[in-house]
Length: 401
Image (cartoon, rainbow, N blue to C red; front, side, top):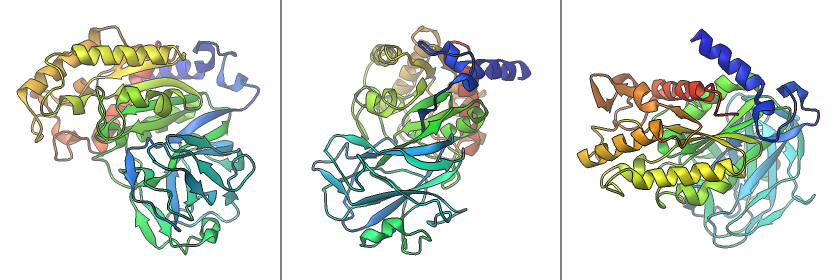
C-alpha cells in the first residue's frame, strides 16, 4: 500500500505534464488560473415546475478556488426556462442559511436574469467568491413563472430547500423563508471553480455511482470518497451518475453515449473519465446474448474521450445475485462484460470493483459488509471500497498520461 501511495503522489503531482498538450512540470507551474469542474449533477428527468418559488440547492464542492461559475440547465425541458434570479453563497454548518457576507448575485452576460433554451445548459459569468475545498455551496434559482417541466436530478441524497413566491427570496441570507425541503436538485447541472487545480475526474455511471445505498446528507457516495483521496493533489471529482441509466439505450435519462459530451467530455478541466455503467442493461433480460454489444459501446465511448485527450478507466460490474432482477442469463453476460473490461485492452486502466466487493465464498454475491440489503447497491463501506479501487487504477500511470 505504501508503494501504491508513493506512485499516486508522483503521478498526480505531475498530471499537467503527462496530459496531452499540457505544459509545465507540476501543478504549481500553472501561471494562469483556469476553470475546473468542482461539482456536477447530471439531469435525470423532469419534475413539475415550481412557479414563483426559489429553490436553494445544497451542493458539496470537491476542490476550491477564488471564483465560481454555475451551470443552469433546461436540457430536458420543452419550453424556454426563465430564471428571475440566481444567487450563490457558502452554507452555514447546516440548513438553508448562508455564511454572513458570502451571498452573491449570479449574472449571465452581466444580466441578473437569464432565459435558457430547451435542450441546453447555460454557464454564468464568473462570481468573485473564494470557496474552500469540501465546502457546501448554496445555489438558489428563482422561477417567477411556469416554464414547463423542470430539468432536475431526482436522487440527490441531499436535502435542499424551497421558499414560497417572491423574487427577494433568492437573496435571503439567513434562510428563514426556506420552509420546505426537497431531495432533488433543480435546474442546476454544475459548479466550476477558478484556481490552480490540476483538473477533474468524471465518475460516469448509474445508481451505483449516483450513490443509492449510501447515507443521505453525508457525502458518502464513492465519488465523494474519491474526491477526499484526490483533493491533496488538486483534482476535482464530478459525479455524473444517474440512477437507472443505461449503457446501450435510454433508461432513466439519456443513454450513456447520448449524454457523454454534455455530462462528461464538455465539462471544465476534465483529465480522466471513470466508466462504471452497464448493470441496468444486464439486469433481468439482457440486451444482448453476449458481451459484444457492451464491448462496442465501451470502445465507442473510449474513442470519443481519447479524441478529447481524456483518459478512461473502466470499472468492472459488481455482483447482484439476490436482487429481484437477478437471472443466470444476466450473470453470464456480466461475466463476459467483465472479461472484456479486464482483458479487452479498450481502457487506459481498469478498476476491478467486482473483485474488490464480491463475496469470496460466493462471487455472484456482494460481500455482506458492503450490501445495504438489496444485494445490488453499496452501503458506505462499499462506497469506500469502490473509491479505493478507482484510486489505485488512477495510480496505474496510463489513466492520467
